[in-house]
Amino acid sequence: QVQLVESGGGLVQPGGSLRLSCAASRSIFSIYVMGWYRQAPGKQRELVAAITSGSSTNYAESVKGRFTMSRDDAKNTMYLQMNSLKPEDTAVYYCNAYRRSPLRDYDYWGQGTQVTVSS
Image (cartoon, rainbow, N blue to C red):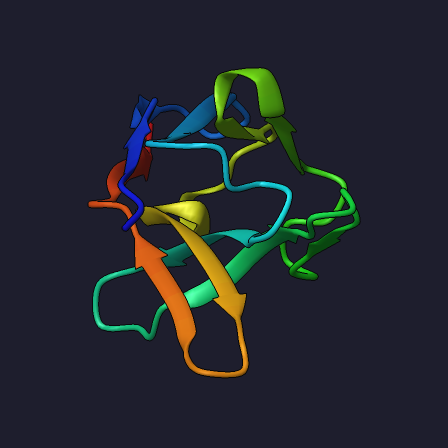
């Protein structure tokens, strides 16, 4: 079992920045794909960014050049640095840990943290 705890959300003005953190209960980054997702009211949850065990990152087109995902293996913590925030970035942001094995898939979610971009 893996527990994920997000923090760092809040209210920010358009053009501002926030850094989200996701702390894992144990060392998993070497074997899990880690992701940040978001869900805005009335919309489906969408992938924002992901990082593989080999530290390869992918970003949604809507956040490329503005968001940066990273991780600190020693702290079992991953981050999402969000710059140049827009009102359309407003959503609940979730971190996710996913691993596929021959017998089952492992899929863990944090509780989410609210990000509101508004003037």
